[in-house]
Amino acid sequence: MIDSALEKLRSWRAEVAVVLGSGLNELSTEIENAGGVSYEKFGDIPKPTVAGHAGEFVLARTGGIPIILARGRVHLYEGNTATQVTAVVRLLAAAGVKQLILTNAAGSLNTTFHPGTWMLIRDHLNLTGASPLAGPQFIDLTETYSARMRTCLESTAAIVGVPLESGVYASLRGPQYETPAEVKMLRTFGADAVGMSTVLEAIQARALGVEVAALSCITNLAAGVSGSGPSHSEVLDVGRRAAGNFWQIFSAAVPKLIA
Ligand code: HPA
Image (cartoon, protein in one colour):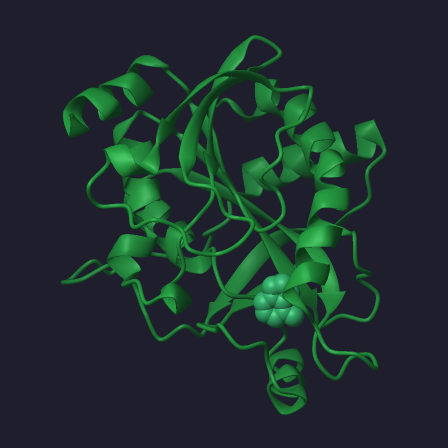
């Protein structure tokens, strides 16, 4: 059963895959959906428990090019281990994916990045205290997020007319949102956005030689940056409304992303 599910992913022959974050689960009309493979078919992916996170791989096409969309992710804050959180990435790599795009919802630490804006992740701070790697895997993270893919996404965003910021993403374990004091610390550390995902997946992908890009949908100003604090419903709502801009950049970039 497990092998046949992996075979289904592998035989789709997708080189590009996307992990869809909170509020970004709705597929665009620019994407042709050719069927799903439920996460339940794979023993090592826990069931996502958070509203806004479905649990399936979608075999899809854009502009005739096969892609895989991982709808829904699992997080450390659901009680999962770093190994469980990154199972989706290992499966995508085993399915032959060469370029991975991670998406997430994030709070803004940078007052010039407004809710609804997309931010290309240039680098990260892994403050989760966890790693998917064990043993002597001293991998180099000088360029975790591929400069080639970033250039491609930035130039495509300019062509399709979607604003795209660039910045440093800090990941915390959550699930609680940050205190204003933590937000102040993160800003001092040089982070532009904060969230609870993505970094472990990026580390796992790099360890497997998969090229990575990541985009944060800025859904709110982080705690203490403005009057009211973040809420999950606001995160989902802003994510849903901003999703179209992501699909526009993505579908125009896919032919150029394939190395
Ligand atoms: N903090 C952490 N994670 C988040 C936020 C936030 O403000 N918004 C969306 N995900």
